[in-house]
Length: 333
Image (cartoon, rainbow, N blue to C red; front, side):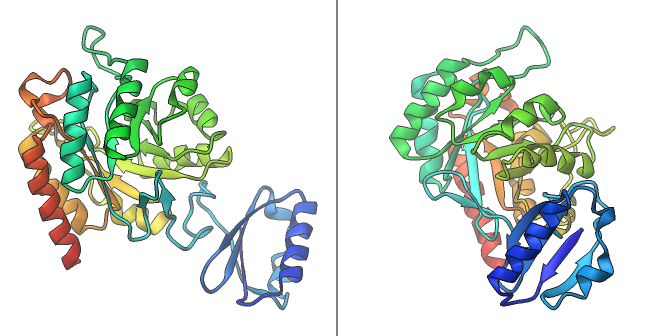
């Protein structure tokens, strides 16, 4: 249930109403907008007399929520959420960011060279895989803890907050200096991991699963938010369909649909969606045009010899070109 309070409601009356709800065993989520305050009631609201609440002088209106996701729901939080990814790098609510870097961290020189290049082209967040979930057990699995250390060194060099993927909740101590923790598509419904991430105060980039609906994505975000961590960035990275010319099928309709359903920012990963480097530029431009809050793009200084996903990686020169075109589209829209 959503209770919207009238503008300039006296603080004492607001607190009295909140206390009354809590005494009924209801958890109250408070969202203060520019013009009013929204109280989201979580729990068994069937005992609440809607007519009684609507009759209060300070209440503007009462709405029942039918969707199973509550905290992620835009009705709970009408204004866009803006997330600080570290160092004042904001995403959401009109703040657009490039998250760029290699699929896997391979060496000190590799990650530092790429970090410098993408930073010079406008990227504010550095991505790089340290722990890599691979389809084959014989493929490169990442440098693990050493990879995170190399990302940290690149951060010192460029000042860019770092984004890297977690695969196991037991690895959390290694992520102390990671600015944004990525949950990959394969772990989108690893609910025990999501519960643990709900206990920390750190932005989480949550990728949509290979064959998951938008509702399932939002319910996974709800798992994290229910634990207390509301710093969630959603990521559309393509879903598996019958098409074989691309690695996955990029669902750009997810952006406007999610914008209507949730206040959380959403970024697009055209690299994983397409799996072909030549398709990254047009899909990145389309993502910007349809209102995405950011782009996550794989960049490698030597894609031919990359240890992971070389065919979908852009060179630094290609990324610079894409970044310029994307920003030109954003100026238009």
